[in-house]
Length: 104
Image (cartoon, rainbow, N blue to C red; front, side, top):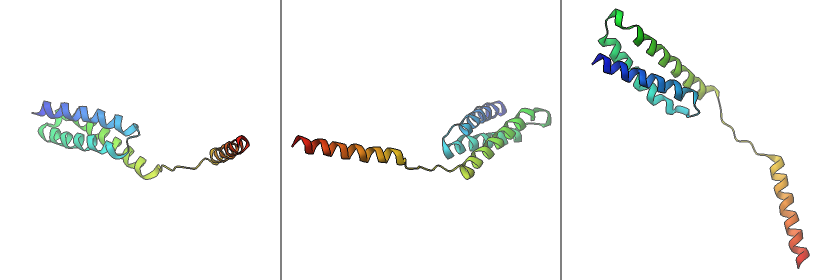
């Protein structure tokens, strides 16, 4: 049972690191939560000399949790209007209207 928990914790730890650096927003909390749960279950099933890898996986998972929380708090997504594009769009529309008036 310990081996199964260790494999699941390691897989989801790797996924949590990958999701932490991809621009997926808070979707990364799912593999982080699963990795933490199975990491603590594995730590509970392990004795002192077997818990080295489990502690490493837990530390990596907590670091990726901090990265995701930091990205959610400090990075804001803002959409800005492009003034140059709007000006070109208006000019193009005016030119098209003038061409239509010249055709009549």
